[in-house]
Every structure is written in C-alpha cells, then in structure tokens.
Length: 212
Image (cartoon, rainbow, N blue to C red):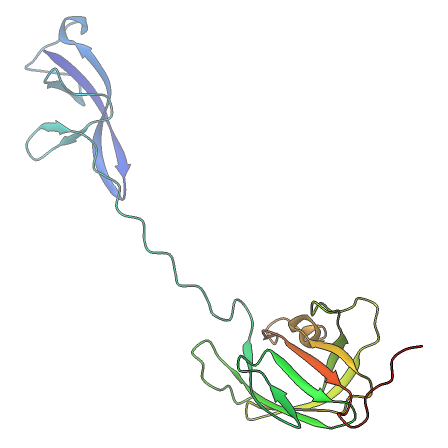
C-alpha cells in the first residue's frame, strides 16, 4: 500500500487536491491509519504524482483535461482603419471590373466615384471637402516611384459618397495608394483602400511621337 501527500491546486479554474508525494507506507514513520497527518491519504499502487483527489468519494484520478481553447475572434475587416474606401464608377475613363485599374486619355477629365463604409459594408455618412488626393507616378509593375513629383486630384466626401476629379497632363502610369491617402490623416481617421492604378494614354487621333 502507498500513501500520498497532497496540496490544493487550481486546475483550469477549479480547486483540486493534487498528489505531490507518493511513498510506500513502510517509509512513513509512525503512520497511524486512525490519525494520519493532514492532507495524507492511503492510495492504490497505480496512482501517479499529479493525480487529483475526488473529495466526494476519496478516489484519485488523472488530472482533468484542459478546456478547449476558445475560438479566436474573427479578423477585423478594417484592420484598425476607421473606414474603407470602395470605388464604383468612373466618368471619362474605363474602370476595370475589380475597380483596381483605370484607363483614361491625356487631357480628358475623369470623375471617379465611390463611398466609405464600416466593417459591415454600410456607408458611413462622413463629410470632408475639399480633399487633395495624391496620384503617384508608378513603374510598369504599378509600384509608386519614390522620388517622383505627385499629381493632385480634387476630391470630396459628402454623406459618405466620394467624388474625385482629375485631368491628366502627361501620359504614363499613376497610382493612388492607401499610404498616399493616409499620409496626413491622424490615427483614428485613416482609410483602408486597396489602391488604384491609372493608365494615361495619348488620344487615339494624336498619338505621342516616338522619342528621338
């Protein structure tokens, strides 16, 4: 027969008597089964250190399994931004089906519209006018050129509806980026945006002559 010494331990939010020492009974000096030391118990031979005591019936068993981990919270669609900007149409230019690219013609005004929405996709009735929207020159991969002088588009937000107007003065590739939109906005007012590439083409009847 063995004896066990226990201590109270909190396991997964509940207190249990947990075995901390197991010894053969003949190694316990002066063991008196009628007056055992506090928190000591006679136990079967198959118990192991760390098992817990069920005080309701005096039996020992392996510690309980940990509760299942809680499901992680769903990701925030806004990822810390105040609102997200969505585009929906362009007048004077051709917007791609996924709203990520815009073809337009040199010297022709384009008006791009969209809206700002919360994490549930509902329009947020913000008002901001006028705004200056930087268009950065980009390379053939759509990456903004770091030292190029940006062009500026005039933009407004009225009751959450966004309107931006621009007349390109040079052919080339331009990018409206999330970073460019937010460069001067304070925390708590920053706008999430997937980005827009603008391809400014020469007029069909007046192509740009090749460089000499």
